[in-house]
Image (cartoon, rainbow, N blue to C red; front, side, top):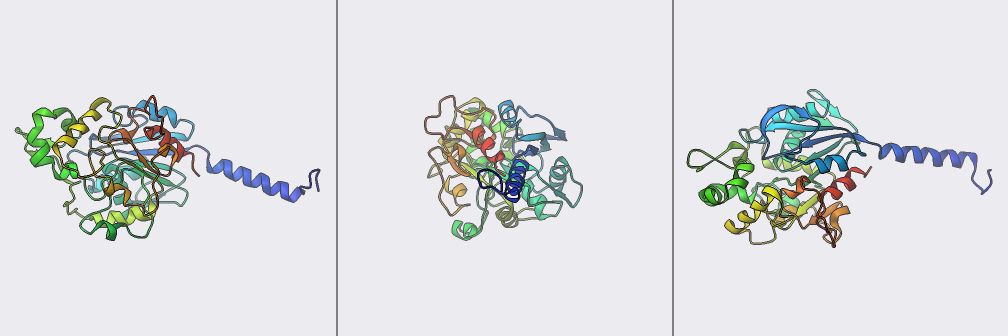
Length: 327
């Protein structure tokens, strides 16, 4: 027994626990999977300022041993394209059927559907020490919200239209019909196509609530997400940080009747129903189940946190960092 009453054996146990805790929070490879706004296929990049922003990468530098930003044509192909799933697995460092280990996966928008499809199709799988975070998550599909969301855990961080997006449902008749007045945001999200902007790109069509899927349905990727996701952030204000092209989501709000709080792409209830427990709004920047005063594009972290955040609910980048620091 040492001075202070601690035995050699007890001290050894304490040291092992400390080493284990350090390993759990050590820097891990980080993979980022985006959605609408990505327009071409290519090798994963080590940065993506246009979609995710430089502030997010700089903030996560201490938690990410490497960065892989998946580059896919989310405009011309729907989220269920098998090549998207293969590319995600490859970006995470595994081949067909491989297991992604000790990795942080962050997904946004239809990028979350890509990840879920990769798991559903067994393109790759997650080891129990891999963490997947998505945001503004929606329940899936054609059943009632209570049917879709009862029971099991569905945790997600980067806005994910698991039930389709209200903006996509309204895109052709309401949004694209007003193309001249909101062309910047519509072009950025690659909604409308054709000489008269009266048709939808495949990527936009694939996040409509009525989208049937090809080899996988929204119900099936919903069930996968319930099993594998590890944390969620929702947004409830289409105004949000009101920065850059994200200001255009306020125009969506003017053109679409959401009927409740929304992030400019989807209703709040279509996000928060993924978790039957409580959500945190005040000081939500550090909450696992975070309901922040943000819009859909703010959730990428590309514009950083608000310069003044009195209530702690305008800080998406801080949320990412907090999730990345979790074991």
